[in-house]
Length: 148
Length: 148
DNA sequence: TCAAGATTATTGCATATGCAACTGTTGTGT
DNA sequence: ACACAACAGTTGCATATGCAATAATCTTGA
Image (cartoon, rainbow over all chains, first blue to last red; front, side, top):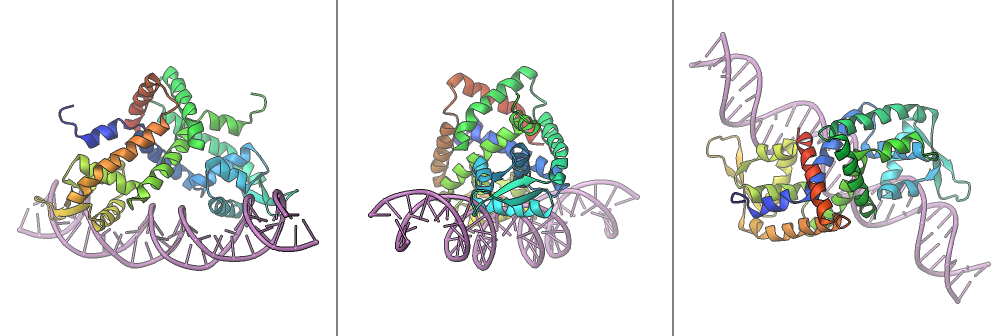
């Protein structure tokens, strides 16, 4: 404790600081792997969302990540340009679209799953099975807060 | 398990996915509070680093976050413009600078500490004392990986 | 010693991102 | 039915960011 100034104390005791560090590493790792498919992280996240639930509106996709509407709009422009998704008219409302994965989009799924699994495996390598489960549980308890 | 497709399984079992979610929330939270001081998150991180260790070179600051040199360069331009830091000639090498907090920079420290503490308190609110310590320990074990 | 390569920092340019304004549509209250 | 507010999505513009090229300096090894 003798050689530690206040800044260091604030930093080393900060859970947020550590999470940011890890997240930035994950960002770089994911970006590097997604570049091969010409996808940004947000575009990837949207693909995953649409693969999980077909036919969502842009607004409801955005709500999942608290992402602003314009970001979703542009990301879907890109994904539509790649032929992975398509906008269809909403059956009930003329101002919204429903978003659907194309054949090509669905065929990309396995590659995306692989990326997620690999990055996760690498990240959690230092943890044993028990610790990993515990960690996952702790994160889950923090998530609802983060989604507000 | 019946109503869960593969995408959902990949997502919900992904530690990285959860960390990203939490980190984005933290980003927004921090950015909002730092905006008042006209600081980005990187600029804030650099301030913290310099407050912790005075006289580092830009390269060594960058190494802390695996941040590219140009990002440090421009962030320090900004911080110098605000009068929080200053570049001085390195005593041994004419191509590097040493970075120092000004009076004004040092006087900003308490405000920065407060922001870190508040955001952390809010984040870890759902955890009890024991869980929080456990969480911190787990993160610490993942960090070395993330720093590579 | 000195040429070749590595290091430190900066900058021009293209792309990405955030904010605010805009269009078109739907909901609400009178 | 109508005016007005709220909502879904898009886009122009300014700023931020990433990449590659540059300049200056230092290190290394023949």
